[in-house]
Amino acid sequence: MTPTALAFDVFGTVVDWRSSIVRELEDFGRRYELQQDWPSFADNWRAGYAPAMDRVRRGDLPWTRIDDLHRTILEELLGAAGITSICVEDVDELNRAWHRLDPWPDTVSGLTRLKEKFTITTLSNGNMSLLTNMAKRAVLPWDCVISAELFHHYKPDPQAYLGCADLLGVPPDRLMLVAAHPSDLRAARSAGLMTAYVARPLEFGPGSTPYVVADDEFDFTATDFPDLAQQLGA
Amino acid sequence: MTPTALAFDVFGTVVDWRSSIVRELEDFGRRYELQQDWPSFADNWRAGYAPAMDRVRRGDLPWTRIDDLHRTILEELLGAAGITSICVEDVDELNRAWHRLDPWPDTVSGLTRLKEKFTITTLSNGNMSLLTNMAKRAVLPWDCVISAELFHHYKPDPQAYLGCADLLGVPPDRLMLVAAHPSDLRAARSAGLMTAYVARPLEFGPGSTPYVVADDEFDFTATDFPDLAQQLGA
Image (cartoon, rainbow over all chains, first blue to last red; front, side, top):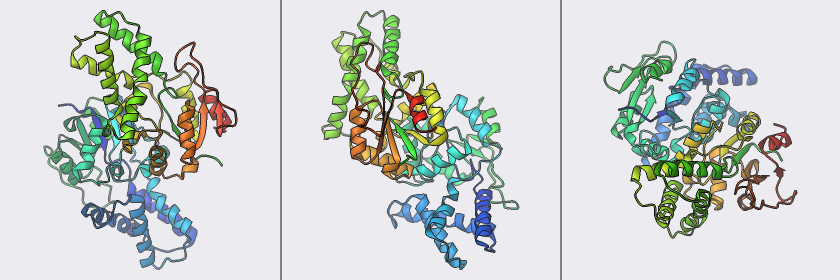
């Protein structure tokens, strides 16, 4: 079976959120003359994201976009660090750091090759404006931008995977999720999608423990996007 | 006031649907050795579209995407023309002619200029897969693809214009609709958007009567996309 379209997880798979957020936090710290362990701050910001989404997924919170979840977590972290004198506009601007994430070095060349043969879209829990602004800044050559926001269901809810296939007009088994996270891929597979794992061992920083994935667990296992393109004949 | 983002009507504004559909129908006619007045057939296919959408807008039909509305109209027109021996796959393929519309000659260069300064998106009644396939084939450089399908409200319902602004994260008065149709622009203006009229006098074929639009009715009035880019300093 060959896929018709590829849907990409974004945070960690397409962009290096950690280095980008640390860079933004360091800039912010210099501007306000703040001393903090910014890599830990970045990790804590990211760590707040899954529990916040789970509250939405369970129905404890009404639909809330990632920008607003990120904002709530950021305010908590700033408060806990005793950083309380930042004007609201600057907190907003810092929160939009997630719109300014840098791609991995192989991302743009890999996507450009894959786009020659497949329809390529995002399938991210990031909201539409976040993904659109990110793509514009980083020149990511998507054919379209699709977000969990369109379905009011965060991944790994099956509605996100199936909704993506429906909007693209392809059967679920002709849509392949490309992601660096086994849990995302397993949920996509349960919904009937094809799956491609791409290793991003630096996602959580140097010295972190990479995922261990058996070669045959997913339809494809690749070291980066050009390797995936090669395997797919693109 | 300067817009942040531009949302483009597509059929007639970005692409020359009539020449493209006539071309596809003529190819189809040659393949099946059929004699028809294909330009009239194309006009009738298009003419069926507004009443079909209005049935959805009034609630007489549940939400139905344009591909399916086009398919219903096509079957009626083929039946009325006595063309009854076409296999279902070939009717489907002909119906997807709407995914293969050609841009106006100035479209790609104009959009490329406008993209340098603004976020550019579709805001079309065409469904997501139609718009995505069209953009891929015609190399339209959208930052994202937004369709009335996402809101289950066809233009000119205000939900379509306001939903587009919401997804882009911009206030309605910083989003400008670009369209060749005064009725679409008037509805966008009523919803609080900025408006730019672009003349497409050949939309309904040579010899058709162009719209008459007062210079001051909309925020901008342009002869084509490069002219709009010039006026907007892009």
